[in-house]
Image (tube, rainbow, N blue to C red):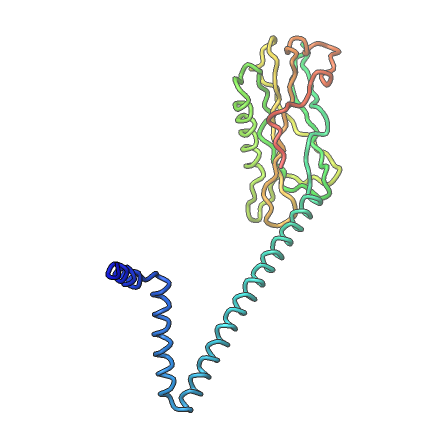
Length: 255
């Protein structure tokens, strides 16, 4: 009985936890530090204290400097963001905005068929529109030419690409026209012979322009008009086309 009890106590004493190991190491390190400190002369002790104090001050100063830098960087980013927001608000509020003044108007031949398309574009903004570009034509398409909304959008994008070339800036060479606030200018197109008498049709086009603010991108106004009446019902004397033409809900990009 006594031998078994003694073996159990020895076994319990032999098992140490990780905390016990850590505590033992700290004691040993502390003993070494105390012995080393006792061997130092007063002058050496003073020097070590000064070094430790200097290191502590340096650590504190470095941490404080990093904190100030982060605060300054955050403030600079906030100021930059605020300035960008203010600039965007100024541009949006003061820039030109071009758009159709009304539905297109037309000229007709002696048989009553449409010949020329005319569309008045007005500057609804507060500053001049510069380098205005228009595609080579206002495009007319029969509805049957498109099988999806994506195809209509693609055709509209093509008209904007033509207009972009007309708005291109060349050093020393003025391009496009300028349109001042509340003024309007008429753009023209030729009727397409691809529209048969029984076809309904769409009218697509695009105008591009710049504003006077630096580093702003080219602006676009894509327009689309359509009718659900076939051409043979529209091309008759006395028909008011404005009653049957309306703006599409696609291909009307504005930026």
